Structures are given as structure tokens and as C-alpha cells.
Length: 122
Image 1 (cartoon, rainbow, N blue to C red):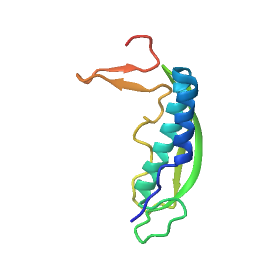
Image 2 (cartoon, rainbow, N blue to C red; image 1 turned 90 degrees about the horizontal axis):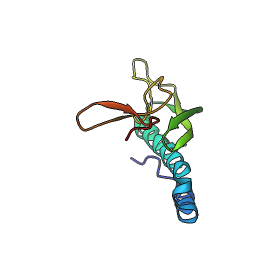
Image 3 (cartoon, one colour; image 1 turned 180 degrees about the vertical axis):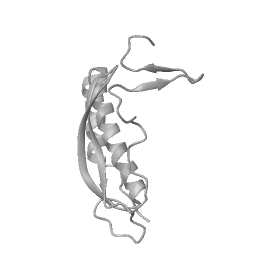
């Protein structure tokens, strides 16, 4: 079974941003990588890539929802993948990297304590 492969064009753009601009563009690089990772996660959830026909397909991609997240790297404009036509009773899709309803990301320390990525503490 084949699934969505990483978009080598987007990864090349991320690498180009890093090599040409260094850490000044690390926020843009993270944004590109997270958006690509969410698309890969959706394909795995659906058990099929975009435009792929399989017997195991669980639904279809339904576009994207724009969401801005505040992080220590600045604001990231994310494209949250949507899913439609899931079988009745199936769990809904939401990327694991994001928490529903959060305006800024949280990080967990090894001890399990949480803190905001947007906060000034390290």
C-alpha cells in the first residue's frame, strides 16, 4: 500500500531557506516541515495518498483550514488538513502535533510538566 510521499519540492525550499538565510528563517522552515508532516499524517490516517485508489481507504481529504499558532519562533501559518466521508463511527482526524483549541503550543519536560513554547522561559 502506497501513501503520500514527502513533497521533495517543499523540503528543498526549506533547505534553501536555511542555507541562504541561516537561523533568520528557521520559523519558515519549521512551518513548511509541520505542514508537510500533517499531510503525511492525514494520508496514513486515510490509508491512502491524495488521488490514490485503494480498498483500504477510510475517507477523503477535504482541503485545509488555516490556523495561526504562536511559538518561540514567531507566528506560524499552518494548513490543518481536513478529512471528509469517514465511515460511520470512525474517530475524527486531527494532527497529533497540535492540540485542539490551543493558541500556542505547549512543550512537556521529561518530568511531565508543561510550559508554553511562546513563553520567555527555557
